[in-house]
Image 1 (cartoon, rainbow, N blue to C red):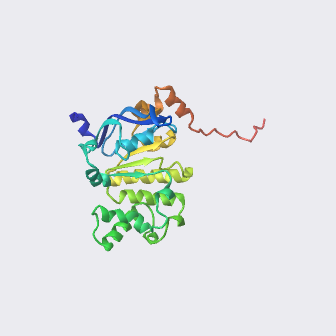
Image 2: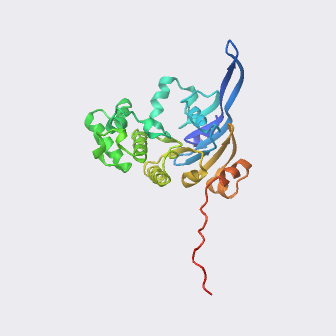
Image 3: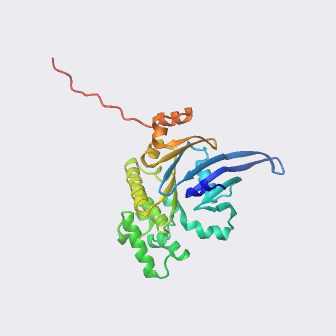
Length: 278
């Protein structure tokens, strides 16, 4: 790989993820479904890359393949200058703490039998960030303060919190490991609009204070506009347009991108009910 690729925190070239389609009595492969088909994208340190597309566009599959949560069919992947595809499973585990994911459904992401202390703090022991219970509690207190929640909640359970609070806890679990990259996979789409804004603002604040990078996945361009520096648009497994936030919103080139922009709800000015007196 060229030197240009090492300038990025994450650099992906020629990524493909194909799934076999089986049929017949003996389950013979008859064709392949190209969920992700030869895409390139990169993320610099401190950058937010927005990845947008409708359901089935391949955006979540692309993100998972890019960090080997699922094995890519083809492609070159560099993370912090290291080829992820050359790593064994054990080697890959060692760098997992540098890449965290926040999923769409916070309640499903949290073990209902674990307290918030355990939900956030268990991985700290696994990755050697803390060695004692006291260190774990101290770290979790710090994390809860960063995500805008009281340390008093540590011994409570996920079902005791609202969706927005649960997502804050999931974000806290992600940042507890001091990652370099967080993948936000539809991380606000299940939340009310007012709560979405609060979570987006929290993510922006954490990015600045912790020097994070995000791969932010959404079907909603209005959400992407609020947080992304650069944007890639996926359609049927291919990137059909990419550019800066301003370029995509002010000068979209593809018909599909224009359709996504037109789907953003717009407020209409209310007509005054007061009649002019003549």
